[in-house]
Image 1 (tube, rainbow, N blue to C red):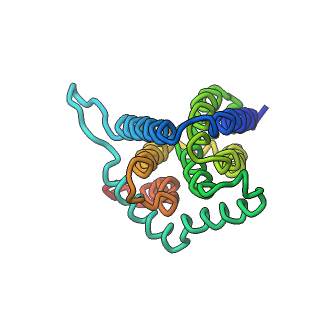
Image 2: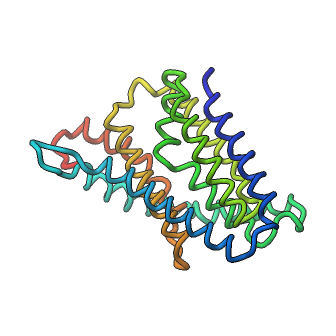
Length: 247
């Protein structure tokens, strides 16, 4: 069944968030802060590992880099597009509108931060892209099932620190991953393994940035970098038309 992986992923996020909310009131503030820092540190290394696995390769026994220029161009052009669309602000506005539908005693002051942080963390990873593509192309759910376990644990810790906004992030996850699964059934035969790897690599870079945001007071506008994930598709088309291009 196509789409089952996303449904299981959403169920895991809901279940994990519920557990986190149940323990939220019983944890001292210092515990919440330390747990949140621990999640941020884990996210940093998950993103770093994914990015390095895509950027580094063995060639003639030596470690070399690949896709470096593509990554730079995608991030820069993605930043221009994302800033023009102001995606980050749009996510915050959506979180604010959703917060108004939640009773104040449940929403709390960190609803929007929880919604935006969790939405980006759960949506832009390599596993979200690859898993949703595999779901749409072959009906295999193994990647998204593994992602469900990770997201379930993360949602417990995030919701314990940031509240009910983490639970509501299941909505963009459903739309994003479900949309990729549906789209994969239409355009999947035209996506190469290299192209999927490039998109996953850039997604991992953005996960790394989310981890930095969780550990630092100075926030990177990760939401405005989201278009970068899909720009390798554009560059693949340009490369096919102009083979001499250096990326």
